[in-house]
Length: 441
Image 1 (cartoon, rainbow, N blue to C red):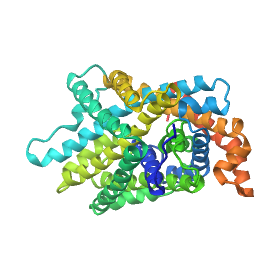
Image 2 (image 1 turned 180 degrees about the vertical axis):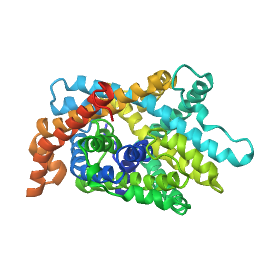
Image 3 (image 1 turned 90 degrees about the vertical axis):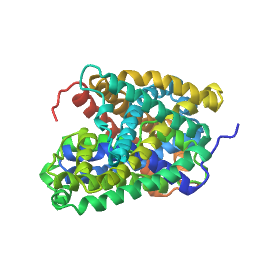
């Protein structure tokens, strides 16, 4: 069977940017900025995005396009020892990540619903869907099951329609909407009394705040937010046409992804400072702080609905990409029909989603294991595969075509040595901080 391809350059860019943005940049980027020094973190993030994310993204797309396989088949096809087992491992990690990530998308959708219903006299308490710190909440569990099922159903319906009619079409609609809603919320946020404090804090660069810890945190966020990991971008790379310029699209994808994070910061921090809230409040910055901000704004429900609605769409695009990783694996390597693969993924994902719904004592380690840890490990496997297993001639042809320049040849050396070292550093940071707790942040 001929492998389906993306239908247009606009569709490629909208799909890749939409995948990369997700919750990683609109939810995680602002709270990481708040915890790691504001402008110092942003400066390091921008440098790392240019020097690590762009070439690593080129590498993952090159591997996918050359093999015309997703995660389950690409490593075996390129000749990695034990490649089939590596593919199954990474697909299993992705499947576990789909579970908790879909729960989080459900939280965002519920927050959007709470904002929409606020002016009708029977507002919904958005915190009811969030899992408790400890123990068990029947209300939270019931809401999470319902909204996770709805999110997975929406993803299934889009993935069922294939690459062009499903994933690409949805991305071309949702990605522009996200950026428009962010711009609208920014306008309202920066015009609040006292918002200038937030803008100054966001832009106040202190060289002394650049530390190894902040640098590694920025590197980890780059890997997370761009969608590196040898899974999502690899599968989408397998759908790229032979005429697609991988270099240009990698640059524009990282620009779009980083731009969304910066816009999210401008939407959030001026409002946070205007109302005297804490910018370094961590993961709860989005779910706990912003609803308070919208409650205090005139017609705040409008801006809340726009923000959480746009974020729901962006998160959905990342969820669709993860869903497609597993569907493509079954279709490529086991010969399943897309319909059979889609509904199998739906059923198993619902079962896997149940444990992290119980409380944050389960959710957070699940996220650290299958999100932070699994993604950085997958990214390391991917860049080592591209740099050391894939032939230089093949990689040059994928990246630069028939006439590579000296700059393109230098890029190959950069991919072989610098990018794996950087990703390994991010993996080490995750291990000593989140897993072993040897460094307190």
